[in-house]
Length: 87
Image: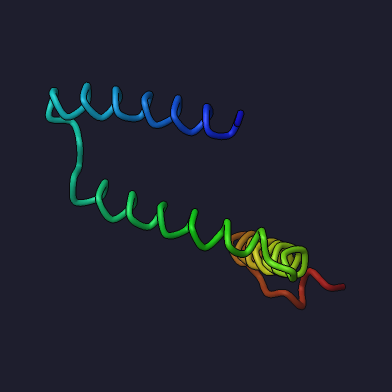
């Protein structure tokens, strides 16, 4: 029940913000529509994965991949190669 209330309140707040920004012509619709659609698809896929039998495997696997990619990005921005950091 609390989750339903949260969703309704959040939707109402987002609707108010949309009306205010749209009235001021401050909405980049070319970005807003695809990002909104991607957010809805992501929420649907995420909820299905989180409720599945293998949820913890997906979550931990995704976490390891994201952390690994972030670490790789940080190391390559610092310059040098991974071998320089290993020793």
